[in-house]
Every structure is written in structure tokens, then in C-alpha cells.
View 1: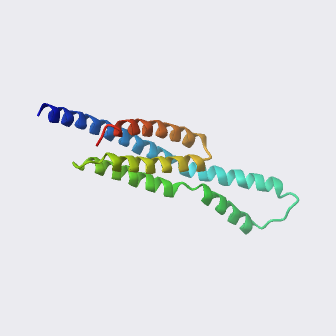
View 2: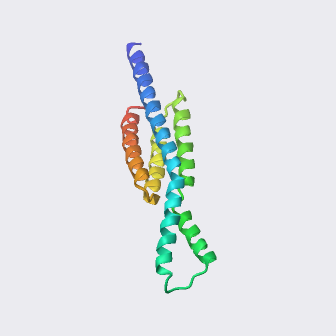
Length: 151
């Protein structure tokens, strides 16, 4: 009985810490989301300026210029990754509520969270998002360490 009670207390403590870390990742995700419009605007502005500088000797239609900018902005769009990241965070939280053995499932969800964070980092072109990705990776590493203690 003492062992079971000890494991229940430790489990509750681990759960509380994991919830705290997942909530922190949720806040980081919201902050990254707030920066996405800035990233797209910066890219549009930078590309337009660069192409105008190059365009002195080259004739290019405004429609074609707009099309090229849209293609590049689409490549750096992280909306899809942010949506999946939020879904993974929600799944992680709901999995914690399960009283069954969840350790392996949490490991897999954590891997998916890491993939989304890495993709956001590789697509990011502004320093604020890059810093937030580094912070998110540090939080994720703390989560990985804690879930090693869960069955």
C-alpha cells in the first residue's frame, strides 16, 4: 500500500509538472502565431524591394511579381504547423487524463510536437520566432525528461 501511495503521489506531481510545461508550450505557440503576420509582411516587403532593385533592367509584370511573392510567402507559411502543434498539445493534455499506461503514447506525441517545432524553426525568417523555437525546444526537452518516469 505504501508503494502504491508513493507512486500515486509521484504520478500526481509529474502530471502537474507536465501540464505546466504543456501550458508553457501553448503560450509560446500563441506568441509565435502573433508573429506570423509580421513574418509574411517582412518577406513581401523585402522581396518587393529586391525585385524592384533588380527590375531596373528587366521588365516584369506586376501580376507576375505578385504571383512570385505569393509562392515564396506560401513556402514560409507556418500556419499548418501551428495548427498541428496545437492539436498535439491538446492530445498530450487529454492523454495525461487517461488512467491507463500512457508513457509510450506521450513519447510519441512529444516526438510529433518536436517535429512541428523544428519545421516552424526551419521556415522562420524572423529572429523573434527563432528565439521562441529555441525556448520551445528547451521546454520540450524538460517534458521528454519527465515522461521517462511514466509508465
